[in-house]
Image 1: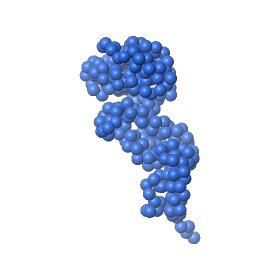
Image 2: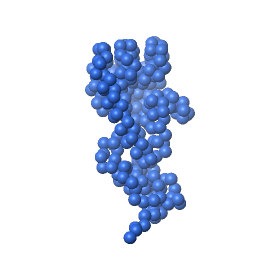
Image 3: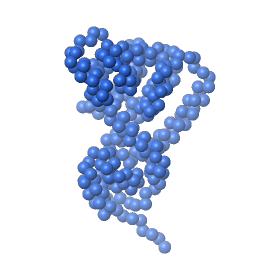
Image 4: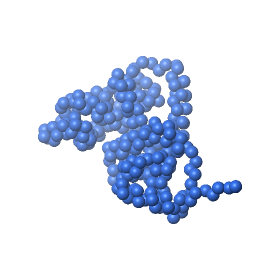
Length: 270
């Protein structure tokens, strides 16, 4: 593939990338993603796998952005990542290959994939690992179902689409319309970061699982009900609610006061 982009554009994009500016990644994503997705798809004869390989290559690029100093180096880095993933695809069983791909919910422990893909034979004990993984998955889905009602409509939609389409950002973008797969990736990452902050807080998880001791008035608006739940059940500060719902802080406080005035507390029995 010939690199014919203007030098000034490339220089600015590389600078943005080094500085952690997402516009830098977006520039190269738009330039190279289709090319590497096509190569991976053609090599594996699997559209979903090809997309996953290309997406992971760009996520790795973001993590190692400080080590790339030119467009040629960047292109070769992506090329090597895609090539390694394709080799791994044919060396491993399909299930294990997909487990080795970078997942958003495991991005913190990225030291694991610094070593690259292992090409050893599939061990017999792997079936036990799969069973354990399935149990953990069920528990995580149980926790997720507890949290979902406490998220705003936009966050709920993205999570449900991720589960439906197995984090295939292109299919999610196509389903929604008017949004790129790159934008989907960023918004999903932010939503998962929000979920992780709840998962890692045992107190918040207990509050969510505990039945609420109030009944919402039918006169309460959807925004008022949502703000009241986040404040009462998750014990979020007004600033956190404002950031999560993308509302002005003063408006959040006003809606909470309105909601509080409409709350019906259960009657005590003698």
